[in-house]
Length: 416
Image (cartoon, rainbow, N blue to C red; front, side, top):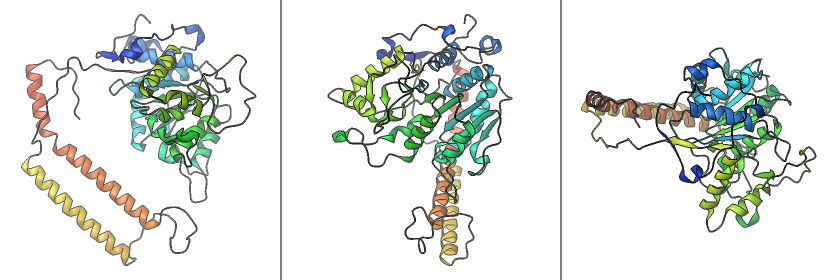
């Protein structure tokens, strides 16, 4: 794409990954219908367009178990992974695939997904949250993006209806749209103790199991794993079953009758992969695995360069007035805690929370109404003080930023 724009900041790659080249781009091996406006106006940079193209190429491959091959987008923070995912939807939408699933960590990020699609010139693609419908109802969204959180994916309603079943029913058995796992590392504990003495873990995490299950139920989905911290241990990649590293899932003894002729995988199962990677130099083996995936066109992992960055720690950002605001807020929440505790103990508190009655249903599992109430309280408490700490720390860095702009031509800056 000769008209593609450069990325707006310097980008680097791990030295090990840089030692191997991605496969040559072959547009005949994939459907590439990125609009001219996206390229010429730089709505996606050249590096971001590279992701869209390699994902499209990868999704045309079939793995040894008959599933469609997946793609790993393991770029670092600041590379615009959300916009790249939107770019992949943009390309697939123009290819006629009009139903997609976007899984992420927070319900608030649905607005980010809408913004990212708007930024790639797709403001008309409707993005709806799965919890807009009851678990017992099939979503009425005919075309668009269904946004799901990991916590919602593992949930079910009071009648036992599972959200995962609801999602699979909306997609249909022939679903060939995108299935994004944004912040995919949330599923990294699918096999938290896998490989210890050759045994499978007794209880995989619910999130990891749900991510594995939805991939199994949608074998033709175009899977993308997006994360800046995809794995820190070899067993953390267990959820990445579409990368083609192993042929069958751990503990799966079923025959694979639909495996395409001539397709093979480096390892028979995930445990075989784990046994080979773990050892005296597991880090080197993981790097070798990443190199192999990049060479196959299954992975991209880049990050912003810190070559021209400087770091300065600014102390004393909270002003005297902010300290008083913090003290007042702490007293308010203490008073609220005492009030809720009193009303709860005297059974005067009316609550819409539903849970297991621990007195009458000892054989049932799950949180009680009171446990859900306090979970909501402390969650709101944490979010409030997190935002308050950020807000009280803004004035000082803001003044510093203005002074910095007067002395230097700063194009990019980030506050942590």
